[in-house]
Amino acid sequence: MGRMNYPALAPLQIGPLRVEWPVFLAPMAGYTDAAFRSLCFGLGCGGAVTEMVNAYGYVIGHDRTEHYLDTWEGEHPLGAQIYGSDPGMMAEAARQISMLGQFDFIDINAGCPMPKIRNRGDGAGLIRTPEKLHEIVRQCVAAVEGRVPVTLKTRVGWDADTLNALELTAGAEEAGAAAIFLHGRVAVVKHAGPSDWGLIGEVKRARRIPVIGNGGVKRPVDAFHMVAETGVDGVMVGRATLGNPWWFRELRELAAGTTVHKPRPDEIRAVIREHLAREENLMARRGPKELKLGVELTACLVLRAHLVRYLRGFRGIRLLAVHLEERQTKAELLSRIDEVIATGLKTDPLPGPDPAATPAE
Image (cartoon, rainbow, N blue to C red; front, side, top):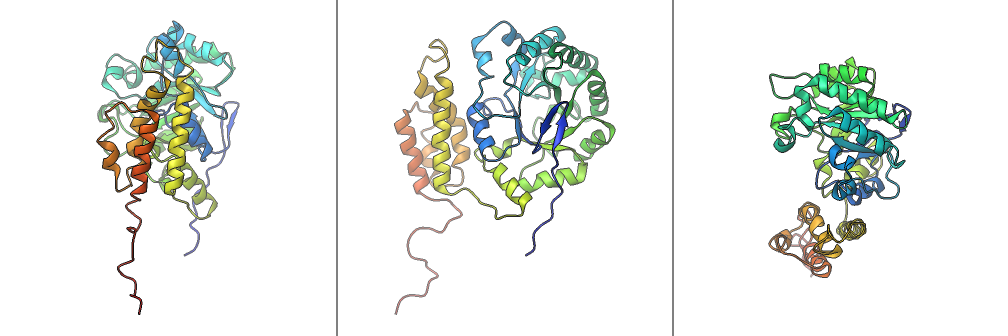
């Protein structure tokens, strides 16, 4: 079979920032901390955005909020994502974060669909108040004073009757946004149903600044399909990478026309262990008041959400799942992980003699 020809993923410019490989890890609350992001970067991710940071909490110096901006060495290009609905507070958060010198851009969250966020006018709630959203962009751009570009992450609309992505992105571009990350679903459906790549394409054709498509990208090959169908300048992927940071490696291998390597059980084991080690490092940066259970146990609890995804292809996943709600030491957790991995992947032949083999004479 001949090599498949995929559309090129060319470098893009976000203001003064050049992104060599425009494939971004999406921000996902509770998952994309520095430990997971850095693993994705190491496996071929081209850019990422932090978990969303409450602008008010950051400005008043809330300790836990500040830790959402913890980073790992080598995380570039990396954007700091802020959320809120007060233009002045958003601008002040953007100003302060831009002066840290550790982020390559500031991203404004106008896409989080969670009811507790959107219903108070933050996140995707800003889709219903375009004028306020545009003022937030304008003030954030002014506040960073050119230190970093400001981008916007939003959705194609609030619901099926309010598909106002063209209006939202036109105003954001006029207000100084350097790029748009556009999710193809409306806010009220969150992540259910198909992603409207047609509307993403309309926005791309209407905007002068880069548009990065998001939503409906599951397999690595889908990134190429999105670029071909919509003309977007880049792709952002989220849930498909959870438990599978090798997703980014596979995409690069497809682009290069080389052999695609699925992760082996020993690779999965090694990455899980490294992920836990990095979580421990992050937890050690926090104060004792934030870690009532201590560094090791807290790191194990944080990793828990990832484990069922890392190990979902193994026969013995239930060996771990039944204990996930328990508090486990690092040694206990790693031992159970090893037990699951020892059961083998469901796609591998069962150990023992091959029943189809010709018996010996």
